[in-house]
Image (cartoon, rainbow, N blue to C red; front, side):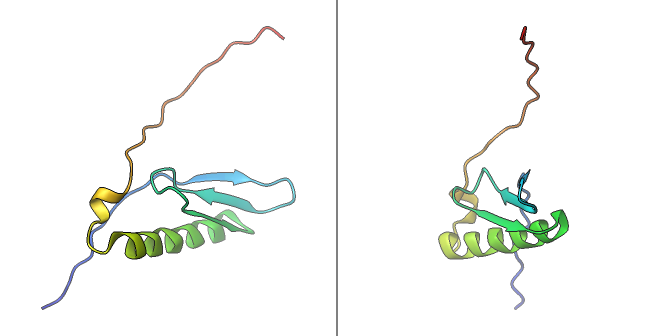
Length: 80
């Protein structure tokens, strides 16, 4: 019998660092953070980090581990 994985989608937040490279994290997976010199490398690293996160903390309960977040655009007017 072949075991099939659960395909899940998450939002990853990339922050460009002044000293170079990117820090990236997954808000739905508290503490799941990585980095990379390029955005491509950071994406590869965060995918691996998320897989490990779910494997280590989930142990078959992956669907109940993460919190649901939503992203909304925010417009702010300032008078500076």
